[in-house]
Image (cartoon, rainbow, N blue to C red; front, side, top):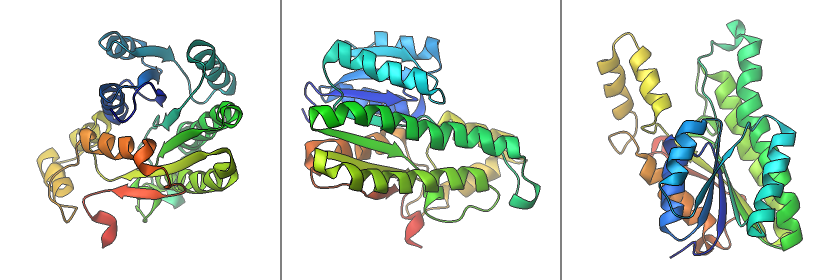
Length: 250
């Protein structure tokens, strides 16, 4: 098993991509901490797995993040893996008409939450002399997505934070990478489709947007995440890997 006895923390782990990562990492032998705001879903997921623990976490709050990392080290002795997956995609307008509060909301979770996760995990990883961090970015952080400036900017920030952290922490044997999914079949995407004027047309458009047809599964993203945090990727750091059916190759 590729993560045998590793201690993995996954924020936003109660649903979507996070849940898929929790299940996949657990199947590969990891002890998994499901960190999420959703207590009911998180507890249910953790209780269904024999090596999982739920931790209620608001990624926007520094003290909450700091305490969680300390509690995990107290319980398990270390943090081997951190996946900063928690994120939101609130509807926003073009730059000229955008609501500044929406910008602040998106940045608080996506960018600042990722920064806090890295900061407080790195403090322990540096002491232990190893670690792997994976930050969930997006193809929206690699190419322009008109009409979603706040989300795109927050994900681009995650890509650059990952690169900087990879350089700053290589000497401590800590790897940091970003994963950039395309359109993934998650509750967030399904909500976007449902809100469209013609959901059927919207779904068809999403399915046709990549050279490889169809909507990407959460399991495909979890497989890529597993590779990047495993020893198979021992010399991959500072990378931003698209998993997008070829979308960014255009």
